Amino acid sequence: MTTKHYNISLPLKLTFLIFSMVLNCMGIVILQLSEAKITYEKLGFLESFKDIPIAFISLFVVNFISKIGAKKALILALTIVGICSLILPFVEVFWFYKLWFAIIGTCFAIGKICVFGIIRNNISDEKSLAKTMNNVEASFMIGIFVVNTGFGWLISSQYSQFWKFGFLSISVLSAITIFLFSRLNISEPIKEEKVNIIEDLSGFINPLVIIFLAVIFSIVFVEQSFNSWLPSFYKNHLKVNSFFALQASSFLALFSYIGRTVTANIIQRFSLSKYYILCLSLIIFVLIIIAGIQFLDMDNSKILLYLFPVIGLFLSPLYPVINSKMIAQIDKTKANLFTSLIVIFSSLGSSVSSIIMSILFGNQLLSYYSVYILLAVIVLFTISLIYFKLADKTFRK
Image (cartoon, rainbow, N blue to C red; front, side, top):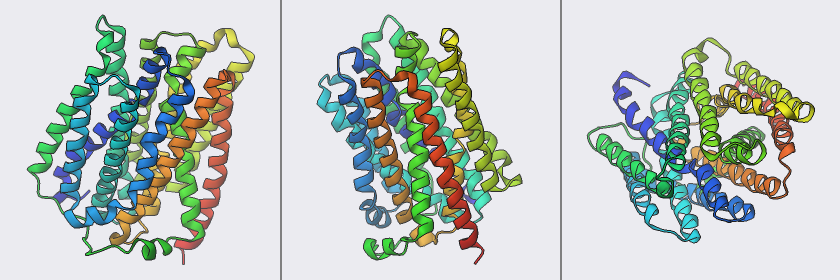
């Protein structure tokens, strides 16, 4: 990010931190509500109440953001998140969780489009864009770590029945971020009087974009298999308590943060495509080891508690690296609309993954957890190779 806009990096990072906390509290909610006898089938579809609004609203908020500006749109989204987090501890009924996640998903769609739009509006070089995106998205992983560690401590304490009051901290953080944004003058993405969504979308219908969106879908599909369901896998299959399950999952987020931070600092020395493929290859290698341990040495399977987090080092850079490579080629005036497509396919990947995971858990097929994820990563590896081959041909023209 240029020096002129360097001072906006903190509120952008805090924005992703906040949205990470509210989106990735799903693992805690699943863990706690499953103990309250809510079935895994119901909990699996709970993810859809977050992801479907994200997918549905993304295209329609582009005009709204263009009209009022990214700064005001971000402040509005953060205000709603803060209010919702303030209300949640005082509501007991299950249906409210559906409404809550739907509202949070809508706000996230607005927030992510605004953040990506601001970044793209100020950076053209794909490697610099990759560096900035990795830095900003690294805070997303810190949000996962903080929410798992904080709620894990609360759940394991004598005040475990008050675990939902942890959401009040998100309200406070939202207020701080809103204050920081209110004091800044930031360069807005280029505004248009009105975006013709249908006409502009037709310009994106080509093999390269379609394969790219399939890659985005697959990356989030794999990520969600870990983020929301790993605590329940640890507790149900490895028989550890709730606190340790959440702490072990926190280390996945911590390793993911390290992966994105390291990537941000070294990515300009490497080819984006080669770095991406190397990360994918290492994920497959670790998953093969995990699957072998599960099937050949079940008595020592608790070593999985320490192996799963290592995957975060190599999984976390994939999303920002592939996004930066593609977004750098998109016209700045179309950045918001293209980001909305990324948001849509990300949310679909998350929702489909959670539904499938709920079936896996509901049918007690946890022994196949690592194999299921390994197959998904192999599919991702295949379509990623296709994408890079098409991208090389397209961008060289």
